[in-house]
Image 1 (tube, protein in one colour):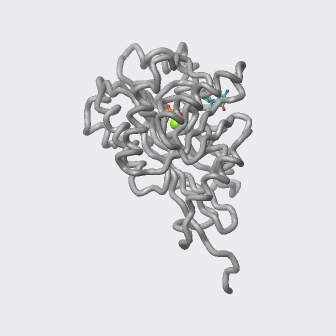
Image 2 (image 1 turned 90 degrees about the horizontal axis):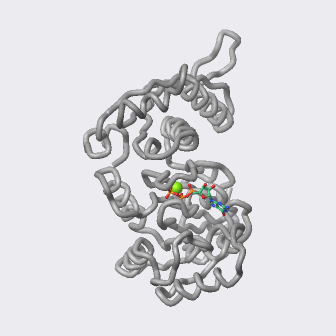
Image 3 (image 1 turned 90 degrees about the vertical axis):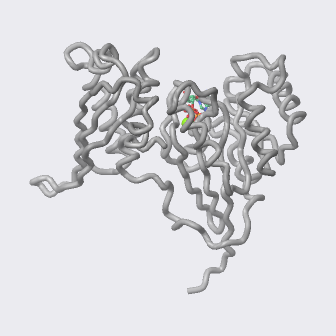
Length: 309
Ligand SMILES: Nc1nc2c(ncn2[C@@H]2O[C@H](COP(=O)(O)OP(=O)(O)OP(=O)(O)O)[C@@H](O)[C@H]2O)c(=O)[nH]1
Ligand SMILES: [Mg+2]
């Protein structure tokens, strides 16, 4: 059968400082959560592909870790993933906040300035997304952000939106379709991410850890998925069995993660199981252990084992 539509594709990377809502935006466009989200900066640690197919158009998004000043080897790997995520794309979406917590009196902040330099160096087209407009109380603030960034780079479009409410995302999509070129789709039309199922499961567990823990504990956490197996129960119902080790940096952190009488770890396991069941559409069981690996974020071998390079 011949296809009536011409297929068009574009690769789009999503860049910006930590916590501005890059992953939220990609999830919102895809209509499904493929990248985890939390209120802690540096939630995303590797580049994550999200594939959006709408009729003849296929937009392949690359969500990247928040670009920040590196403090350890993991940070350096994360910043490198940002660069890798900008290679061979048709355009980049630079995400900033509508009402940033820091002032803009001193011009474009260093993280964004560096990313804009990178756009120039790579001769990449950029679309500016001003996210979190639902939090905006003063319209003038938005105008200031627009003026500041428009003066710093010739963006193809400036789109204020809210990844939370979905307001403005259609406008963004209509701008991004402009980068599509006639080409067969790179991925099957029903595929939405390049992440293997076991990575998705590990990430869901890490999301629950990030959301349940505070202070310096979340940043030093990794999840090592040891078992991901699908089997049928005696009743013939499919179930996914997951066993994972939570890696942390200090004995004191281990205590916090487990909680009094194991209550915290149990809560995290339950929250993760519920999300895993929702994502995969079958029952799941989640068993968690906690291990200390001192300073793992500076050990390339461990970073590699955990798939974070
Ligand atoms: N109010 C509001 N909150 C938002 C919006 N978009 C994202 N957030 C919140 O902002 C926080 C960070 O969102 P993420 O999507 O994880 O941000 P990110 O840019 O991917 O962060 P990193 O992966 O750390 O770089 C979360 O608490 C989100 O719920 C929005 O449009 N409005
Ligand atoms: Mg993210």
